[in-house]
Length: 329
Ligand SMILES: Nc1ncnc2[nH]cnc12
Ligand SMILES: [Zn+2]
Image 1 (tube, rainbow, N blue to C red):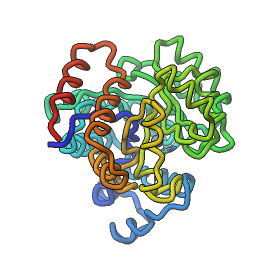
Image 2: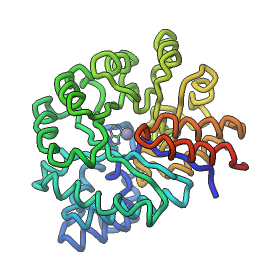
Image 3: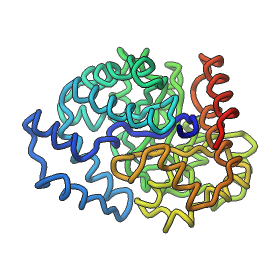
Image 4: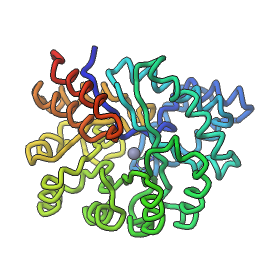
């Protein structure tokens, strides 16, 4: 069994594998512009974040009903369980679905059907994090927060994703303030393709508790010092970084330097159906490409639970952490 871990950076729409995409397309009478799964897989060669996002949003067209979202989440949870995931904080992108005429209820109720049974069926505790698309307007984000109000008992926090460059965190100051007033936890993608200043802004203006990616903090020693001092977790996604060409090869990934600097790093899968691996695959990949020691891998697993939003269940967090310490690599 792989080392127990929490997954903290996972877009549920990014778990849509080619085979289920075609099954859902057939079930819902949606035409995909690819002849078969092979041709679709051919499209998984990305130049950058935007070229991936184009396909990611295109394929979402097959998700139409509560059952579709339930099936999508169940398929992810089954795969994650097999890779040692014990706790998952799952992103979803409601604006991408509302724009297609779906309701917030279809998305949240559908996902919840799977998540409510996740512990019993897969041994994974779960949380939902609602992301705003940063290339949409701040008004649209605020409307989305409003639409989520009936479902806030199922949503632990908010995030910020999609095309980063040109859409700095400050654009979403008001919606983050409103979310904080509602008691929601706050995270944001920053420093994936965007500059280190976006990370600083996410901390200072949006009040985020965790930074998704955060890779480019390494360009600013002062920022690294701050992130280390304040124990701000970073949710890294190594295979994603290679596929989206943020790093040249896995062997060039700054993860070892980040750990050496004392950063609270975690390893996650981002959009595993598109980037070639789930959480355990990402652990295996960094282990072999970067030669991480067992102690470093244990640190990454430990960090994932430390960085998780399990505050309401410290007993559970302690149990997971004990499993990490007892694990034999
Ligand atoms: N890696 C990523 N960065 C930004 N937005 C995303 N949406 C899904 N995956 C993403
Ligand atoms: Zn992401």
